[in-house]
Length: 507
Image (cartoon, rainbow, N blue to C red):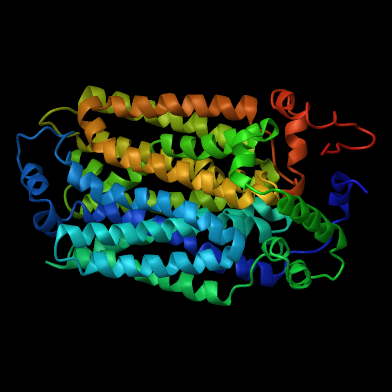
């Protein structure tokens, strides 16, 4: 029986066991989110700036300083961005561990590394110790971002894979919101509030480590590593039925193909039939970063303070954007398996373009050197940024991770996810390192810069991204054979899909 025909034979239900394991596994997303949220808040705290970045502290309090350039400092940018460079490097190591030792082991490694990093940054006595702690945090994020999306995709039943996979992004947004609320409180604790903000990163790291110890590995990973009997038992448990023959056979076949593949990275990078997978794995995370969302979340307190919001008001505005991101991600979780990935991505893109252009116009006309926005215009800008964050939360936020994690066959899945993580962290690093300089140089034009990118990515989704809703992980290969553009790359090595007999791969 063809693999394509077996999808309809899959049986099972959503069991409490699979929901619990996915929730525990998704805690890894909170590491990434907490750091994104905490970095922007801490870098606006006076005690932190005085201790590590005194030049920024002096510029910040100069009345004549350009509003767009107050925080432009490469050392301060390095504090934020160094984490993502170390995460990039560690994700390549994580790929091997994820493949050979299981998704669960990478989750544990990520938790331990992040725990060490949290301790080092909270106890820092000089810039060297602070930056070394950031490197350890980055290693934790590299492992977590590599393993958690794969874990969720492989554990979730096909018809709810989108929603359960988005638990990673949900916990990321919860981490961001939690960090904003923590910053709001610790900003009132002098002079060590910043230490508490950084040290509390140990809480999600500890939860992730403990959760990883008790979680089962995925059936796909167990079967891939030769534990077929154990893999079937886990599959039966998460599906709530013993009748899992069809899904089990698909995973076994995919595992056999994996064993025949000696170099997954080489296969992805050099085989023409894998070109669509490579393009999606690179462009989805690239586009996610080029929405400009990380820049807004990293530096939201800085942006709001530059616009005239003082002290707690800037942190409060950042907490508001964090809450919006959580709520919009919850909406996306409920809609993704009904509306599909494409509808959410395209609608989010249109709204984000409108928000970026609106913000640029207001700042261009009403905000400049040595001026502050009026209260009315400031409220409009904050509302527009919140709408932008909401659109990102239902579109590129969760789906920038979900889509790449579900398009690769088993033999390339770990390597493919590493490519996604590397691209994501590389461009996060680049944007984090250059954003303050770009804000200083482009001024309000920075928002037009990102809106142009959003227009490109929205067109890409409309024309080139096939819908993966309801397609089993091991059968997404057939999507490329049916797509008007990608089939020219896959069909020379695959038979033309036949409506009566189904598509079959030619080996």
